Image 1 (cartoon, rainbow, N blue to C red):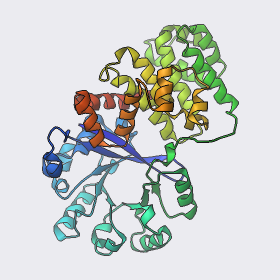
Image 2 (image 1 turned 30 degrees about the vertical axis):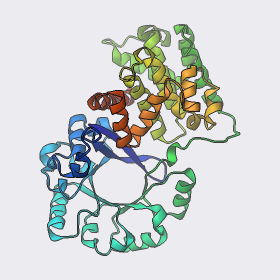
Image 3 (image 1 turned 180 degrees about the horizontal axis):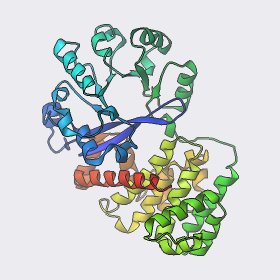
Image 4 (image 1 turned 90 degrees about the vertical axis):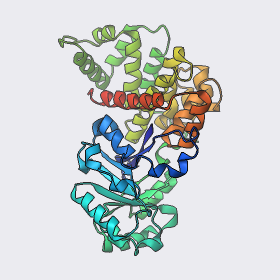
Length: 408
């Protein structure tokens, strides 16, 4: 199958939950399925299948997960498909589930089982018609471009005071800032958090400049372990993190110096650890999702190397994914930000010009993140790549990222 996570943010730009968007089949191989897919295997909810196989910790760090439902799957035996705590699962429904007695009773039963409910794609004119269903909902997703939130907030506070409002299609920082200023929404969904920096005249903070220097050292093919270790020793946060990580890897915790830790890791693993650890620090003043996205892209790109017939470039593809948000990390236009780090021409072409050998991998990753399954299916067909290979590559990236978080 194909699956990806879309984050929902609060007004502090912290991720509160994720929506799982998934597709079970490549409909370009079986075109007739696309119109009838909602009725096929209706008893198996793809989102729940993913949660049950991966777990909420690996998927979202135990944050709530929104799962797409329809008028057929809502009647499935959900409890038998997933052992995760129901409080972590939000069933995302739409207008196809009508305000009729049989649906209302089913939603009540699901609420009694501990599931939360969210409504989306409901028009303002339908609010009154769907009031019996809205009474059961914990969230409602609203297109902020088509609603007056000032009036809507008054309405929802009066009719459904416990319900949380989520603005969707928030696709610029300007929109996000404006909606926060107006007030009324609890959550925000859209691309606003990762919009590329076009212009910024501010200097990069000295601490970030030091991290960039460290990255440049380890991206030199012949870098010395001791040189990298000495630079790490100058930063207490990196030093402590590295020693704790290495001691967890060893049977007996006897590593007491950064040079010892570097020697134990070796050049390849030290380089990988530094690039990921430094990325966390570069994103310290940015939304946490930027660090997650950058590292997920890095591992996903590395995992895709063989599928795109570039196994020898896996480490380069890792760096491409890692630096794909470096403009946001440094608050600089991409060309200027990439000029501060040592990267190959292949990476520069992919991130700057959207051309070259690596660009198809970067484009594939971005389409995947946005759950553009039609385009992903087209590319899989053209490249003759098995869908399940891609799914496993993505799941491996999720697990790898969560393992990184477990190393304090």
